[in-house]
Amino acid sequence: MAAYARALRQMPSIIADNGGYNSAELVTQLRAKHAAGHSTYGLDMYNGTIADMTTLGVTESYKSKYQVLMSASEAAEMILRVDDIIKCAPRQREQGY
Image 1 (tube, rainbow, N blue to C red):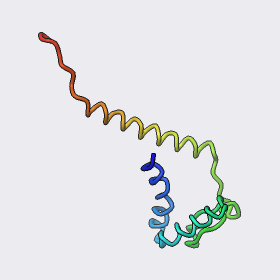
Image 2 (cartoon, rainbow, N blue to C red; image 1 turned 60 degrees about the vertical axis):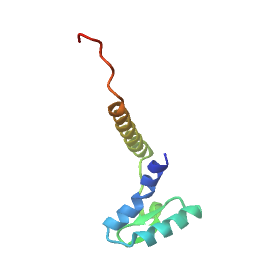
Image 3 (tube, one colour; image 1 turned 180 degrees about the vertical axis):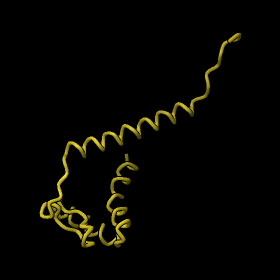
Image 4 (tube, rainbow, N blue to C red; image 1 turned 90 degrees about the horizontal axis):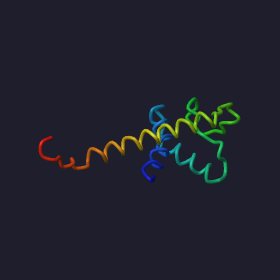
């Protein structure tokens, strides 16, 4: 779970890096805003700052976000299950088969 949470927290940093902005500064500002209770703040990639996404008109559908996170979780779970199956020792077969 901790690794999954870290991966989600890295998204703003990756987005800022890909946009050519200083990700350390932007993510620090964004975390400060979120800690202060401003949960609608996000990265404004046009200006290289943080801004209130509601005033910029950026909205996300809860259902689509939920489905994306559920699909990613299910995919990760399937990969872990396959990995466990591969790690298991092969079963002993009876003579003659």
